[in-house]
Length: 369
Ligand code: SF4
Ligand code: SF4
Image 1 (tube, helix red, strand yellow):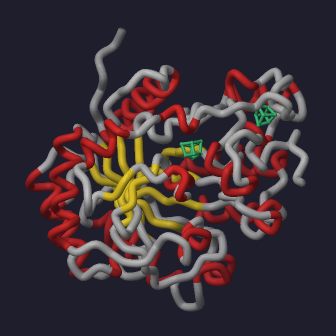
Image 2 (cartoon, rainbow, N blue to C red; image 1 turned 180 degrees about the vertical axis):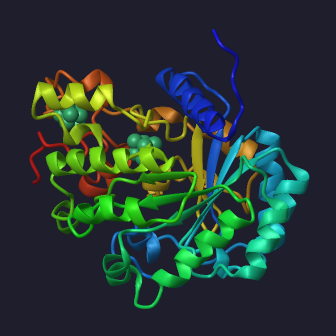
């Protein structure tokens, strides 16, 4: 077997692989490898599809103070976290964001993925970032379509500014990826976006999170999504931009024909088919509450709070069997793809049905009652 080539892409693949191997033996206790940290609940924008809208009034009440965040970072380092996703809200809302990043880079071995809408970036903070971040750290910018589509989702006058910031980030040598959320509103424009986006290191998508019937109607047609994905991949390949997957959505959206499922598996880009929530990863909300995944921020799955307890203790006290699903008497029971799909996303099932013992509401075989 070839050794691990630790360039910036292989590193992410390695983390994915580790996640995958560990999560299929989920009943054993392992150390987590990645965490996401919502360092603020506030955002300068209000995207209609943001999963944060559902938790906003329920969970997000306050933000942690800088010294509390730094203590959590020390704990994450002790726990052995390899990758930290800094998220929000919009992280750049915090005036101390750069200090937090500086602390991570000077005091830990943790790699950062910084998720931002890019609108609050400027020459000054980009220059500071370029001094702090290594080539293994990533700034991930949310971009949902060409100018007109983008501004209809994010707000007027933002496109030029964000594009300029992407170019500035690249000019100073920062690793930048683009992330998009495919919906009926933008799916037909993603190939155009792939053509016009400035040169970046990667381009990927996060399938739409679905918590109610309104969201379901926004999911693009799976066949169309596959066609658009093929186009996007071709365009990106010609431009030397790495396609990171995700446009086609979740596996359970393609189960209607053998041909589709074969195509999906052969071309599968996102490896996290098995749910690794609370197995190899966890999420810290803006008020310090810890959950197994960003999509499982419900009281039933509260693991603890980093303001009151040590993360090590929170992690070792957590019982992953809480997320063991019983899919008997559901459409999954006789589904030939159950061993691969496992009923789809656990968080989506709970958010939609208030139980994890139902299939992902996005599954084409599902009945939406
Ligand atoms: S029926 Fe269940 S296992 Fe089969 S594809 Fe749908 S969610 Fe996945
Ligand atoms: S809850 Fe959903 S998004 Fe989170 S790890 Fe499980 S399958 Fe993935």
